[in-house]
Length: 439
Ligand code: ASP
Image (cartoon, protein in one colour):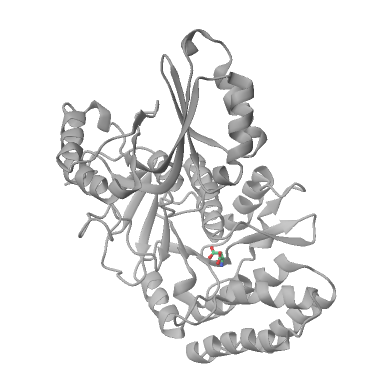
C-alpha cells in the first residue's frame, strides 16, 4: 500500500473547458492523484445531450440508415469546443474521421460510444501533459460479456508498473481480441476500481455532480445529515432501495478489491464527501443508523389456509409460481395460518389474474387477499440492532406519527430493518425514523 489516489471524474467534469480546468486544479493540488479515469462530456445545460447518448443516437441512426451527419457534426463541435477552450493542440478531425470509418466498417455500437471517453481522455492527457493509457490495453471481457478479471488484473498490473501518471478512458474494454465492449452505464467507476487495484492505491475517488450522499431523501426530511462513512455492505442495501451511488456490479467489484472509495462533489470541492470502506473506521461518526431509503408501490399478497404451518413445500410452490412469471418475491412472511409475499408493481398487476388462479390451484387456500399501495422503507446501519432500546425508540416514533406498520423484516445480516407501511404514510414514517435513528 502506498499513498496513491486514483481519481475518476464523471461526465459533469467534462461538460465545459472551465470544469475541466477545475478538475486539473484538483489533480495538481495533491501529488498522490496519479491515475485519472475519465468519463465523456456531460450536459452543459438542461436541454443539452450527454456525449455518451449522442454517440448511441449516432450509431443507431447509422444502423437504421438515417442521416447521421448532423449528429456527427455535433460530436465534432463539442470536442472542438473542448480543445479550443483548453488551448491544446489535438486533431479532432482525425478522430471524427476514425469514427466515420469504423461506422462503415461495422465496428459496432460499443466502439462508437466508447470514443466519448477515448477522445476526452486523450485531450485531457494532452492538457495535463501526462501519458494516455487506453483501457482497451488492459480491460478484457470474456466472450459471454463478463469481465475477465484474471486477464484484466494481470494486464493492468503490468501496464501501470511502468507508468507513474496516466489518464485513462473509463467505461470500455476489449473483447475477442479486436472488438470493443462497454460496461453498463456508469461503468467508468469499474475502470477506476481496476486501476486502483493495479496500482495498490490507498484511495479511489469518484468526483461527480451528484449531490452528496444524504442519510434521507432531502425532499422528505429537511436538511438531512450527509453520510460520512459507509461500508460496501450498506451501500448494497441502499442500491436495492434505489439510492444508487454506484452501479451494483461496481459495488461488488469494489468490495472484492477492498480499496476505500470516496465520493466527492465536483461543485463543492471543500466538502469532505463520503468514504466507503469494508469496515467502519473507529472514527466513523454517525447516528445509530446510516441511512433511510425506501420505495413506494409494492403489493402484499396474503394466502390464508388453516393448518398452513403443518404443510410442507408451500414456499416452494408459491415462489415457483412467481418465478415462472419472472416476478421476484422481494420479501415474505409466514405465520400459522398465513403466508404473505411482497412483490413489486406494476409487473404483478399485469399478471394478477393468472397468478391468483395458479395460487388457488396449487394451495387451495381459504382466501387470498391483495393489499395495494405498500411502501417499503429500509433503515441501514451496521450493528444498529445491537443498540439497546433502539426498536422501542423507532416504533414509538412511528406510532406518534400515527402510522400503522404493515410489515417488519430484520435482515439476517445485522445491517438493516425493513418496514412496510401504506404509501400515504411513507413520508411521515421516513421522518419519524430519521428522528429516532439518525438525529
Ligand atoms: N459515460 C458513461 C455513461 O454515461 C460511463 C460513465 O460515465 O461512467 O454512463
